[in-house]
Length: 164
View 1 (tube, rainbow, N blue to C red):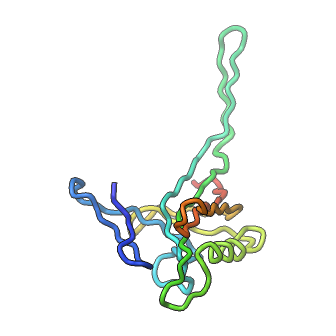
View 2: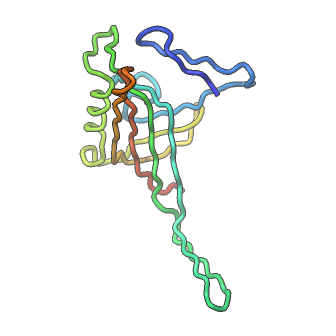
């Protein structure tokens, strides 16, 4: 597992482990947004530390009194996805006055399903990536006040329709 730690205020360094041959970090690209492929007009003081997606088929199993088991399959259901990370409070030298938490709130307000009305695309993997379409349906912010670190944990929640 790679080690991520701050080495200079406003910057983060990634140190790959020496015992892993051919280390290549997994890329996550979200479009539209600050994590999209290539230059983005949006800048965000946040990093993604976790991405989860859970696919689930829609099925029913019926066990009868004569020990017959009937299996009914209704296709693939809608998946749940979550993108989590850490937002920073410090302002960067570029002159952005908002904190990372404020930027995340603005991002959610701008790209949520109830406002955008369309799916976002995110890709997982290398250059080609495996693309999914998902609807941004929720966000959670957790302020770490007790640690005095000026950090905010965040989670963006998506609903991902079945893919073929």
